[in-house]
Length: 167
Image (cartoon, rainbow, N blue to C red):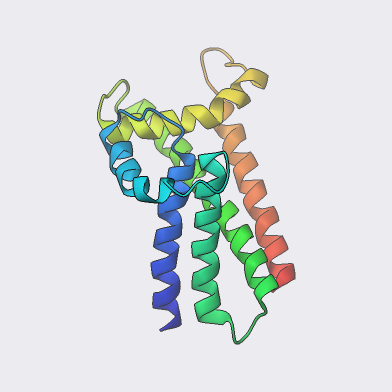
């Protein structure tokens, strides 16, 4: 029973994390679907930035799933901290796989106009552009995805070690 509750709340949390990552073209049909689902929630203007609101909703959903499943074993502060770490970890994981998908797509289907492929490229370019400022292409090869993947992997290891020390 506990694992099914956590799974349902994990899926909802992934939805809001994906919304958090979608700082992209809002004319993309896939992004429009997510935005249309989010519109009723967007009317709640607690914070001036929608990104903060989306992140806090994802965090609240993750906390609710953990609280319903593990409130008898852990206190609320521990569950809130675990929820925060897991939500940040999900953001890193979505960006990690977007970069991998973008690299594979650059080899297999460059310049494809499919909405999902364009979305993956937009997410990864948003992550890779700051890295490209410091790591230029060498001989026509772009090494910025490699460094970004290493960075996200190290951050994931750091978050998991913090999580192990909490629980």
